[in-house]
Image (tube, rainbow, N blue to C red; front, side, top):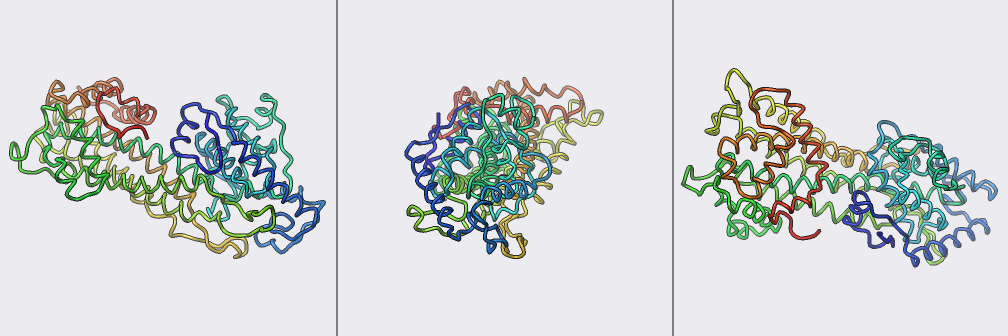
Length: 509
């Protein structure tokens, strides 16, 4: 069980909650802060103070005073009117992450909701009732208003959920689990939808998949090194220590470890003096991607524990301040950075694919074909990889450089961070397919060289891969192979690849 405090949630905690079956609980001390802050809100309402979002309208309506008798109606109207999301729903893991992150930020005790609201969010998490939340419709600045409104609909017994493998009306799931829908009180609707939890949740899920891809890309690149008789000297520790980037040094060390007993790599001058950049510069390029991912992880972990709604309540209600913590710019920048960094894993992988299939660049059968000319072999796989890489270049355009005014120009600068998070996830999916294509080609090249000559690590990985994609003995519908291997790369628990008896990851994360 993971205890949420509002202060200490980590990416590793999220991985356990999203993929390893862990449940979540609220820290009692944090819940006490929530209760104390709620008292402040009730006093504000009782005294009729003019406080944004509690006794006023929202956005451009912030100057409209709301009567005490209409406070609950104000919150209900806020949620139903803001539930304007469109398009396909977020993956279920993202919906689950949004529930967790929303509960965690409320536990900081600055938002003014009842403890009951936090309890309801955690009930949904622990009973695996995940709101159906459309992906499109957020500007990423007034908070992820539309996506989070769809989440809050479920707390109220409205909207749809993913439950026990089906998409159903929320009341079906709530009734089966014996949960009673909430009637939102003063400020609660606003507190629940002001924030960056959609972009952050999508970012966390994307980051976890990108981190896995980064490890997989190294093992696949190592297999390509064997298929092309790559020069191992370029991975010597002295070169990378001379430059000084920790991530570059670590990538080179992992490649050396993966290939330590390979008989297919060469020394400089043995076959050629030096390799092309797509082989020789694996540590420099993959290492730079890891630098970016480390930056993204740092920003995500800050945002996961941030108070992001408005207004925030301090000092027992003595200080209620309207600010802009809901603005997604820090995460928008980070996720745009992740887009670029992950896209480069595919850029360099596609160039390695070209070197595996182009007879002018290697001494392998043209396009790895079993009968060159009569059979095309991997020729069009390279086309597919090139197409995905080109698509990524469009998706990698930063969403955060865009802005458009909303709410009658009251909200006149926005982050578009949620768009960035969705594009990052699309890039990650494309990169995985490119890596699958590289692995198919690398396995085939390794066969021509001699599987028995491969390193212990790559040989084990090769045999696992061959359970998914058989050897190319004749032309077939290779799309099926690419999709099957892509699914395997996504679904396989990367940490279990430690059975390869190689130190491919630097300890427990």
